[in-house]
Structure formats: C-alpha cells, structure tokens
Amino acid sequence: MPEILEIPMELIDEPETDIRENIDTESIEEMATSIENIGLIQPIAVFKKQDRYEVIVGHRRLLACRAIGLGRITAVVREVEPDEIDIMRLDENVFREDVSAIQIASYIYRIQKAKGMSTMEISRYLGKTPQWVNSMLRLIDIDDYTKQAVDQGEMSYSAALELQKIEDPAYRKVLTEAAVRGGAHTRVIKSWVNEYQQNKVPGPEPLETDYQEPAEEIEKVYRMKCKLCGGMYDPGELITIQIDPHCFPIFEEMAKNVRGQLEKEETTKE
Image (cartoon, rainbow, N blue to C red; front, side, top):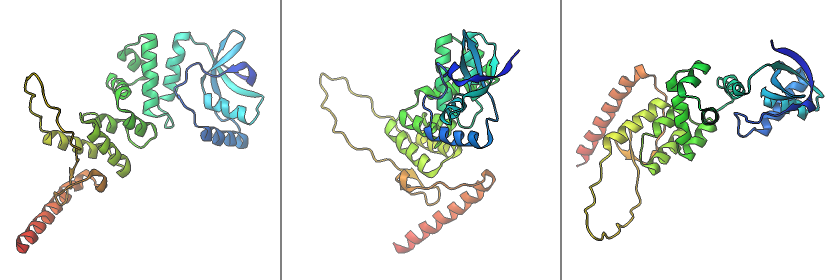
C-alpha cells in the first residue's frame, strides 16, 4: 500500500533514466516560482532503495523544489519491482502535453531494448494499440531535421511519418521546411506526398559497361503545384490556408473558374 511521506531532499536521488533527455531550465524556474507562491499541488512518486529514495515521476518538481531551497518534499512511496519502474515512468508521461512524441519514442525504444519487451506487451501496459507503439518506434529512424521539428512542437508525429514516404531526402527537407514555416497539417502533407508519388518518374537503368563517365551533377529544382492557378512554384513561396473539408469542393470549383479565366486572358493576348 503506497504511503505519503515528507522526505528530506538530501535522501532523494534523481531518476537513473528519465523520459526527458534534456530538461528546460526556464520551465524549472517557472515551476519553482509557482511552487513558491502556491505550494506543491501534486506529490512526487518515489520508491525506496535501501536507506534512500529514487524518483519515479516528478523529476522536474523535485528540481524546482530544490531550486527554492525546500528542505523536505511530499512524496508517494510506492512498492515496485525494479522491472516495473521504467514502464511506470512511461505510463505517467505518455499523456502529458509537455512531453514530445520524440521523447516518448526514445524511451519506448530504450525500454524495449533493455527489457526485451514486445510491442504487444508495451501496448497492453499503456492501454494503447500496437499500431500506436509501432508508430512511436518508427520516429526513431526519421531524419534529424524532421525529428527536431517534432521535438520542438512545430510538427505532429503523424505528419512527420507521412513525410518519410518521400524517398528523396533533399525534397523531403524542402517540404519539411515548408510545413514548419506554413503550419501545414497532416491532411495537407498527405496531399503533397500523393502529388510527389504520382509525378515521380523512375530513372533509366544504368548500362553494364566496363567504365561509365561520371554524370555531371545537376542541382535539383523542386516545384509544387498551386491548387488555385495550377502553376509550379518553389514550396517556400506557397502558403497554407485552413479550409473545412466540406468546403473544399467549393474551393476547387472556384479554382477551376480562376484557371479558366486565366487561360481565357492568355488566349486573348495571343
């Protein structure tokens, strides 16, 4: 049965493994100010190891309390097996808004490797589907630029996974930059990916010869189609607009009329 104690700060150790690989100093200072003004609302959770304690959840709260010089902290002491500690930390943090999908993915990956747990076992413990766990694990292998965008909250993890369907890394980075800059949602990014896959043309198979002259490297120029006029533009020049899915047919009809008017004007000029 868990018990609630007032534990001296010097007897509490920080977690050996934490779901957050980097802790924002500014957020600790903000939390410390809040605790100083209104007190600690939610106790931390710890487990006992010999004559000391280690944090299970509440690492940032512990750091904030130390920052304002508290001598003791309210803690729930749980009786847990060593193998359960990492899973408990994951379970406590997986629904928190201030923990990014990248941090969750990294922690799941570490637990899976260290404890040999299957995707099904992790999903059952967290009350998530195996598909969700697999999606988290797929984030481990995405490129660093997209991973940073997800970690900083500039892109959803579902949008990041959608972008990985683009094999060309240079074009993928162009679209990632455009998505971050314009705040594109997954639905928009899916349309970009579909357009890429439809227009992708496989290159010719190389001929088998004794020697092939190295081809001159040509800088690729990436273009995306404007949904209104049909022209091809640099993705960085395009903007994202928010439209209700039910209104999209109306927008398409308007775009069709605009393109017709532009074509008519071009014909008149000729």
